[in-house]
Structure formats: structure tokens, C-alpha cells
Image (tube, rainbow, N blue to C red; front, side):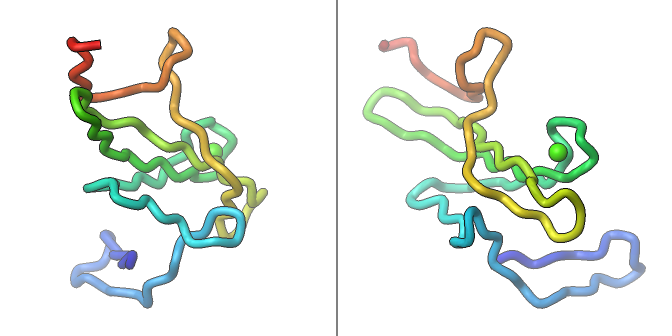
Length: 103
Ligand SMILES: [Ca+2]
């Protein structure tokens, strides 16, 4: 459940929660913990995109990657249809806190 908070008001104003959808279905992160969504214009087209940090946890690999949902709306309410991992300059997915010393 998402709750939107008006940070410019003197007192918090909570609005009715809405599901954020990807391709018409609610975005489900699954078993990942602490998804940490960010709503910001990542690609510079003037539309806010959705970035969700997702924790990874394998037997000997811990860290986070970032799902990037590009806003395809053209204006108005955001529209998302698919995601990709954010990539670093070397073309591999950006990660944080990754312990891959055992690979
Ligand atoms: Ca954008």
C-alpha cells in the first residue's frame, strides 16, 4: 500500500492509496525486502520514472539492484510497461552492498 504525503503543507495530508501498475497489473516485488521506491525523472524526458531498489539474497551473494520503470505516459498519470535493471557504465547492472568475493 502506498501513501502519498504532501511535504509542502504544514500538516501531513494523507491521500487514498492506489496500486502502482506495470502493464495493467500491480507491481509486485515478491519476496524482496525493503523495496525503497524512488519517483524521479531518470532519463531526462521531463516525466518522472519509477526506480525500485530490490534486495538480492543468494547463498553467497548479497546486495541490491535497481529496477527502472520508464514512464511512458507522455504526460498526466504515469504509465509503466515493463522494467529493466539500471546499468552502470560497464553495461552490467548497478549494485550496492554486493558481496561477490566468492564468485
Ligand atoms: Ca523520465
